[in-house]
Length: 468
Image (tube, rainbow, N blue to C red; front, side):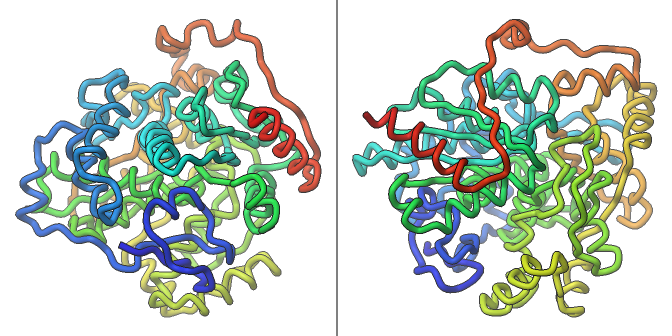
């Protein structure tokens, strides 16, 4: 199994090198050169497996044999052993067609734990084998940061710096990042938007001397290993709903496009997923693209669903590469123009290929509150604001989707967004016992302007201090 860059100028490499590299040197994202594929019988044989074993079976082909299956199985079992639900990612039926896939039973109450708990252990495994040390730099709109910190805290060969937009996460999200006292963890609050944070991280990775000096690695969904680790929960849910004997749809509240891309990857591996529903809030670039081929960036607007407050969805580049016939030169050309002008010139034939599989949906804050209220009154189920976008999308687009059951990615525990949930329902969801004292813990973070040199200086100081 080799991996190639979507922009074609970085050398192909194996799984371990892709894990440690994150972003390709040419600014592109790594994808498998060819997709592993399971037959219907092979998928059927995975039905009912414990989640960790199913995950190992789905992910193992992507390792290209660099990690023995039994080793990977042990890493998966260790990753999910501490989740609060024995099923790890249980399905809850909401109505006749919609099923909430609960991805928030990990340590930080968000779907990012599903991949990052494994990613931290993969880093440990590979770094111990190589005798190396890395510096992880990541950007977060709310949930990735805390999940990455929880996965990497106190690890001997890893330093981690997470950038978040100052004042643009929920208080729970911020405190989950900034109250971790581990010396290898540092937090930067950037005066700007998530897109600004993401741009700083990407700029560090394309600065070759800095990247080499710091041995940079990525935990954002620009890292292919994280996408690979998200594929299994779609497989588990689809198998529980009758795949491969029937088709299912998925509805995903989407910001950086990585979560829905994992579902698309599952289809490339042979799962019959008939439709991908992309839910957006007022930051609706993906929905506008699917509606009218309008991929034009606008200023990021804060919303009740902050993890979706994104206008530059990094993982869309991986889909674009496929839509353009796996043509790296065409992908690089389109991405250069998007960076230069803020508009992405997707050829009409590629756009039509996208809308054959993907549907877009937009929900504003008022609609989000109403959806939380509606679902609670109908079923007694509490949604967080992001998942509410997904359930509303599934309901609105049900007539177009031929009665397929819809897997709605329930991406966060409602207690991460208690103000919105209380406003909608009158109930204030409590944090699980392990986080009950979160608001009493001391915070540690630094505030910096949106300036690359200052951010790099901070990262260098943190990494060198710990290396010493």
